[in-house]
Length: 238
Image (cartoon, rainbow, N blue to C red; front, side, top):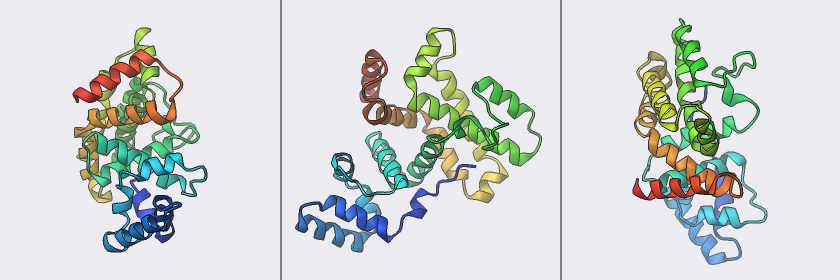
């Protein structure tokens, strides 16, 4: 089960690393960042519009990967008008978990419980009788749909041209998966009902934010340039 735990993992050393990044080669800027940290907490540095360019331009970042993932996702969402740290935390946790190994294909993390196609996940869901298992598959359906359409939009479009469903199909199933998961007793017990409901409602915005993150930072020199242009136009309209 993917839980939004990245923000809770930040400690004083992470905060001071952000101070150093913002104040690199500028003692006055470093002192101001330290004052803001002491007065308002780490979020004021995480949301600083200068922090992402500072991280991306640093030759030796010195930040933990979870912190970098969170900053990337948080600022992509802020650009998209989603100002909810819990949503950013959940999305960053999902992206980071799915970035390693084959976790993106499995609701449980078990290698014997892997699925590549949404229809197979729906069959898996129909066979899940245990409420906890259903909750895992529902959330994974949302996660997987958001991961595919957000991080790999050109892959989804390429499959569509060969007869596979368009991204709207994934968006509908993913949003429904999150919504069903949010309504479960398991989500309430985990304190996840609110964030899962928010992710369901904002699925399109979150997908758009991940599209821009993917185009800018992950696959900058790959993919379909026409598709990127279309996504950029849709981004500005949205």
